[in-house]
Image 1 (cartoon, helix red, strand yellow):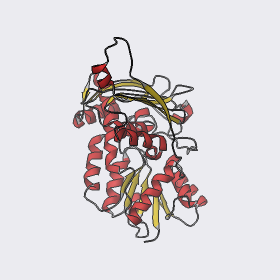
Image 2 (image 1 turned 120 degrees about the vertical axis):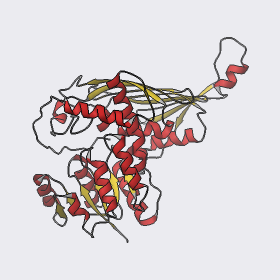
Image 3 (image 1 turned 30 degrees about the horizontal axis):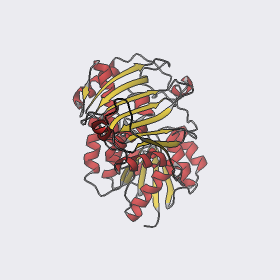
Image 4 (image 1 turned 60 degrees about the vertical axis):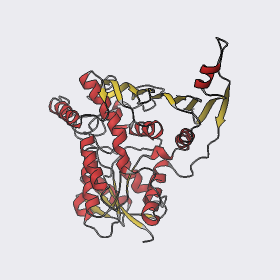
Amino acid sequence: MEQVRIGVIGFGNMGSNHAKSLYEGKVKNGKLVAVCDINEEKLKKSKELYSDIVCYDNHNDMLEDSNIDAVIVATPHYDHPSIAIDALKANKHVVIEKPAGVYTKAVREMNEVGNNTDRVFAIMYNQRTDPYYSKVKELIDAGELGEIRRVNWIITDWYRPQSYYNSGGWRATWAGEGGGVLLNQDPHQLDIWQWICGMPTRIRAFCHFGKMHDIEVEDDVTAYAEYANGATGVFVTSTSDAPGTNRLEISGDQGKIVVEDGKITFWRLRVSEREFNATFTGGFGNPECWKCEINVKPNPLQQHVAILTNFVDAILNGKELIAPAVEGIRGLTISNAMHLSAWTDDWVNLPIDEDLYYSKLQEKIKNSTIVKETKSVTLDVDGTF
């Protein structure tokens, strides 16, 4: 195989963007050959844009096409695990959009299939290709920061006006999307958080539902996390702050790293805090600290294209995946824990009680009173993460 023939399942915001990248040749050795969507107007639009592709209104029919090697699953969240399972069982390589799913119980079933196949199975965690976050991970993995003490992430530059939530009948509903900012915007940060710092052991979260928008799901969250080594974390997110902030700060035994405004600053201690604490006798004093600006080489590929290029390279050449889909359950576990903590007004230990989470989610769906006009508008995703 010299080229991977790819079908896109779901021609909405992200699916149409991936189709465009493939069709314009931005993904080396990847070719768009088919699009699937249950919406007749979206299928018609895809055919107008790409006259030489095959269109399907049913993903099972697409998966029977022997001229398709791989699929991108870009449907609403609930469908990610079930369609991925169907595709893997049909012997297709698969990349799913984030999040991996809405609840971990379904994602765990998907992972079992993924772990028992030889197909390449990836997730669109495109922020792992961000050179700033990958550099921070490299520094911490190399021990430059020492043992992590504290992590604080303020990620409030996800501003969304009401018209965004009105663009789809499924958006911002428990039945259609399964959550708000934690499920739609923050899967990237929740993944990067655990990718760099590991998984916490318990979480206490305060979620505000429809605080600043006419929606039933969360649009403002503050959460506190604890780790096995005693480290703590605070995660703050919102879709109503304007202007918003994106600041990641990680403190360790050897100093502090901050990622903000397109740069990494490392305040590095000359000796570890523990050593200074044990040996300094002056009463008032601080370890000597060097402020270092960390140079980062930009990634020549746009983030989503980078993940798709890596996906194709893994199929053709056995390249290691940047974002294996089976790792998607980790960030989802954190967001499920935040929801469950808010719903029960209590701490939640990780791993979470998956059955309890699922039952609480079903209660939210059953008791929903929101009425949304059923419509679907494809938005331009340029400039988003």
